Image 1 (cartoon, rainbow, N blue to C red):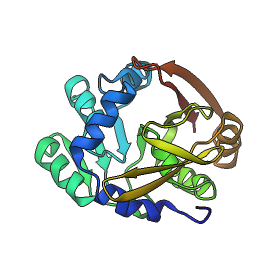
Image 2 (spheres, helix red, strand yellow):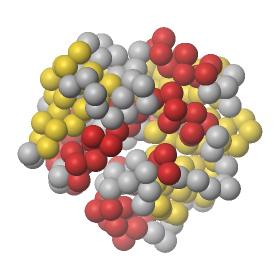
Image 3 (cartoon, rainbow, N blue to C red):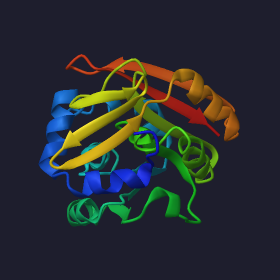
Length: 217
């Protein structure tokens, strides 16, 4: 499918059970927070931390267990997930049930976390705009973390539509994704006015090659 957008994926996540996503995390080797461990230096130095697309709370589990002294924020578009997050973390995390594109605030964040291939839920054409929007939410000297699969990898439970576009069929719903390359991330960084970009490649315990991109404002 050539003409898909982030809105196309709304129905996919609305029909996806929380337990299914937890199974994805286990199969992908992310359930034990190996991605978050890589980010300790950035987490330690940041006071205001925003997670984009908090889903069922995998990253918030790590943050509330290790960084409860920080000011923690999260946004999640799907209401069933956000309701669950508010019930579990509401006393410690400021959680908004919003689409990232609609999220406006006077708060500025030292660190924005966009984990577990969240960027891939946006099409190739949409990715630069949503990154620009996130960059405007950073404080001076703030950092934006974008986590994704290696662009040569194929997500679990999916098939390739084009070399970097994949399709996931699950529970009577279809989701689409686009994996940006390192060159594209370099270009995005320059386009949104970030001074430099750092790349942290890592491998999960189940052998999945993934990448953390650190964009500096």
